[in-house]
Length: 165
Image: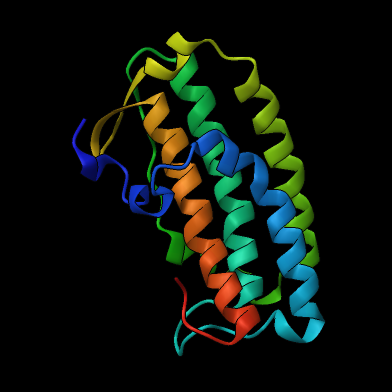
């Protein structure tokens, strides 16, 4: 598979995506606690999402990724439905960070339960992303792991008042 099928692959740096995915809920809870209520609306740079908006995005993506994973396993040669994250983010202004985090944690638990029950062959099931081309179920899992690390880096930067890694 071409490397451009996973725009978040660089964030994994050789880490096992399943381990990254499993650790993410606890890391988000730690960062959310560190940020506190006053830190949720801070951002790491002008024009970037706030910590609360990042949590809302992660909750939305967990819905989308869970659907993509299940559809890829269920439909032969599934074509993934892309979405515009900026259009989804337009609704984040009035959403609650605590609710977003709780939603993410519950959905991630459900998605992890599904992932743990899969065979090695399941990870080779093909799919197509209209913008990224042919990929496998494994690529989707790797994308989730890299996506997690990207946004964790942003939240860490907000918590430390710095620039994301």
